[in-house]
Image (cartoon, rainbow, N blue to C red; front, side, top):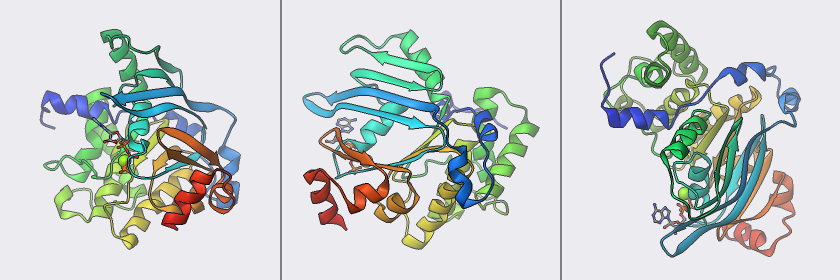
Length: 291
Ligand SMILES: Nc1ncnc2c1ncn2[C@@H]1O[C@H](COP(=O)(O)OP(=O)(O)OP(=O)(O)O)[C@@H](O)[C@H]1O
Ligand SMILES: [Mg+2]
């Protein structure tokens, strides 16, 4: 495989993550047994995350604990801070204050202090536990689907070509692209590209997958292919946090739904609670406008 521009290496490392845990918690492929793989183990913890862009305060102290195997959906009106919060969890956006812990890596900001090289090093370790999937897929256009999924393990983890190929092939098979591994991204449908992007993120063996509106660029029937992949990962025990405008998915697939408005988590709970019996008037108002 040819050498990569250095800017890409940094980019790839943002989708970097570790995989061992998936095997540990791999569940039987039986829907009803899914809860067996959830444990009380908190894999991700964010505390009092604050973020402003200049004078625009976007996150007003958001806290979240996610157990291994949970699927958490984040919903809320446009501009309420969902993407910013997700990006703070991965330190793609550096919070002004608060803490993020994923697995055993903690990054803590008291507020106002300089972001140092040591902080960046710690952030790099944290990002290595996270797979990130964006609305716009972000596949590397001049690499095949297989090469896309092999790249980060090769560059970041120095995995052998054979091992990277084997893992990438298995994951592409898993997301239903086993017959398209030699295709280039632009020859695939949006749904296929997004599934390739998921396989690429999984290749780094993440402890947590973060998705920012993974299906909002897709037609409904194509979205379903992507959502089915996420459901299958949930069955396998993967921990997933999804920012979504797809209320049907949030309601049907989530273990927990967070409703965000004005940079705070207004209300959180099981989907039946949030969608059928929300307590906060802000949640009621939001759901009235979109459902
Ligand atoms: N890099 C940035 N620089 C300046 N302002 C930003 C930046 N990123 C986000 N913002 C602002 O922060 C606020 C929250 O944006 P964010 O993208 O988190 O909202 P969102 O809830 O994801 O909205 P949407 O549902 O439309 O995607 C917005 O006012 C946005 O303009
Ligand atoms: Mg957003």
